[in-house]
Amino acid sequence: MRFDYLIAGGGLQAGLLVLALRHRQPTARIALIERAEKLGGNHTWSFHEADVPTTAWPVIQSLITASWPAYRVRFPGLQRIVRSPYHSILSDQFDAVIRVAVERQGSLLRQGAEVASLTVNRVTLTDGTEFNGRCVIDARGSTVVTEPCGWQTFLGLEVELDSPWPDELPTIMDATVPQDDGYRFVYVLPLSPTRVLIEETYFADSPTLNPDHLRERVGDYLRAAGFKTWRVLREESGVLPMPWSGRTPTPAAPLRTGAAGGWFHPATGYSFPVALRLALAVAAVEPEQATHAATSLARRLGWRLRFARSLNRLLFRAVRPANRWRVFRRLYRSLPDTTLARFYSLEFTAADAARILVGQPPPIDPIRLITRPEVWSCPPLPR
Ligand SMILES: Cc1cc2nc3c(=O)[nH]c(=O)nc-3n(C[C@H](O)[C@H](O)[C@H](O)COP(=O)(O)OP(=O)(O)OC[C@H]3O[C@@H](n4cnc5c(N)ncnc54)[C@H](O)[C@@H]3O)c2cc1C
Image (cartoon, rainbow, N blue to C red; front, side, top):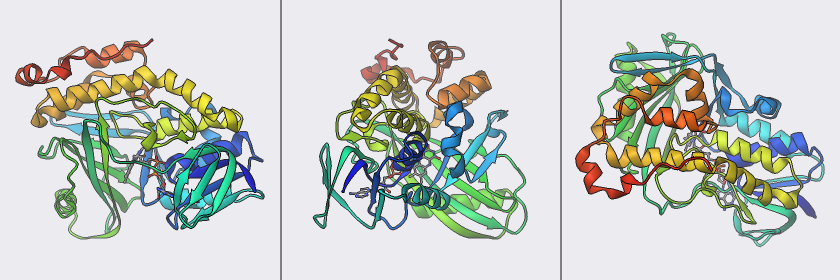
């Protein structure tokens, strides 16, 4: 049997592709091959309202588990509510929605099946099974990182509390906690009055994650908020690269998508806005044109992806770890809600980029500037 699309991997990028294809090409024959028994792994994926182009809401609406009208940030000397809606997808819902979207006549969902190799038109599994198709899409997630980068490390506990969490809004950065191991903040998602995801996060120089230590710190945060007991429902953790050099996506067939293909926001670690745009671009053309569509998108996003990498270079190479939180406080103090929304969605303008760089200067360490010459390379401008 020949498919229109053969998708290797069943994570965030693959799921968004399936939904976009079902929207634009409802009769497309899709084969999705995932090595785990569940699609989407164990994640909470969050995104900002502006990450979704207006016309794309019908594509992703069914994935959303929780929504809030705004979010908070907290720093020493600054508390702010950003009036921009925020949404989260939990992987159980993701699994249920994508499963239904794939399973149509002429399409195929294979779980517990490992892809061994793929070419422009063929996917081969480790058991020797071969599938042929008009377009092969590699969505197998992250690979070994070889380029120099900083790291976003985090561990979150979803907990059930005896009494309601005191805030109905999410806090996407609470940096009032003691700073160590780079920029440290706590991320809080109140999923229901008594069910909360609390995540210890670091923008660190090393990818080392110490789960016991981070679990303890989540406990400390709950105790500081006045809770004595809680029940842990779920745990998730991640180590994401925050690159400051290397290449932005260079599409070629078979099309490498998702985090492994460089389709993520380098300065935030969020994949959703970029993965969604790629899914929409690919679904808008015939299977044979997928690489061409991805190339056009990579060109459109190119300077913004490079600019975001330059910000990482400044953050990780020119600012002392203990001072990194000041960079974020400065951004949240000076940027209006609309600029922040465009920054997160990678739709910022050249004027936004200038505004991010100028104003009160970031706490750059002059010694670091002299001893690390690569910091001097100029942030790219739109072409
Ligand atoms: C815990 C966590 C939370 C995150 N939260 C957010 C967030 O809130 N917002 C956001 O935008 N980003 C978030 N990210 C970052 C980013 O969104 C994720 O890394 C995202 O899942 C990347 O999507 P992907 O499709 O490229 O890879 P993945 O979602 O990792 O999917 C890859 C899939 O391919 C499968 N696979 C791999 N190899 C094979 C093979 N050989 N054969 C078959 N299947 C294979 C894997 O099992 C997996 O299901 C988070 C990351 C983590 C780890």
